[in-house]
Image (tube, rainbow, N blue to C red; front, side, top):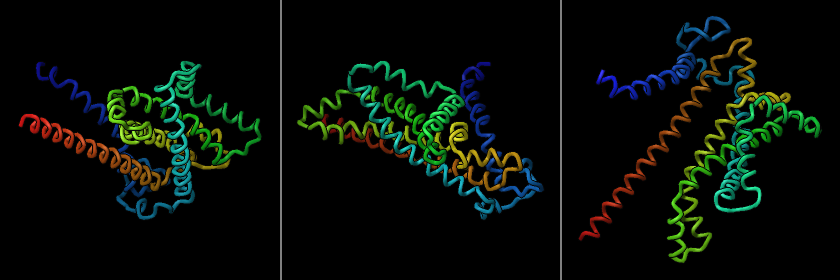
Length: 275
């Protein structure tokens, strides 16, 4: 019992991680499967057809490329606008600031069904044709809130004395922002951009309401599930997971190297001051 009390948190953490990664492992395994029928739900035979012929099924690659394109455009626009909003909310005092803070959280708290139906009614009243433009606008609208919250948390955690020290060393406002503020906020901006892209790429409900005849990757999977999801979908999903995993591991490695460099610099400075 004593050993269990000391290792309970670790055991629970491992169990939760295993529970989260079991579906991903199933998708990766089934990407190498050759199903006997149209449903790829059980293991039948090892095959590389899903990987060697990714675009063999009509609509798979085109819907995947559409989701990538919408995700990139909406992420870039939402990251720029959300970062500027976060700076305005943290660094400036203006009339309606508290109301703006409240309105930023509304898209995050609003159910996607409500938001999707509302945007659809708006586009129909404006007689705006449904398609890639409407989906991109809809994604930008709900991604901005997540970008603002992420960048705002990074700004609030910054030490203002660093910027004050730069100004004391006769750095101008642009130099302070370029060499001090922006490098410190950049990890938060990149994290917000990655979060926004993943939300855009993964979205189904809002896209389904406002897509018209456009088919994104989640919409394609929803339609294919009724007649059998092809193996190529599992292969593309595995590629997306591996790319995301590589980005996370690269970021962790860079942060680790940066921390080591800072620790070495601190040790060198301490040694120099003592000598």
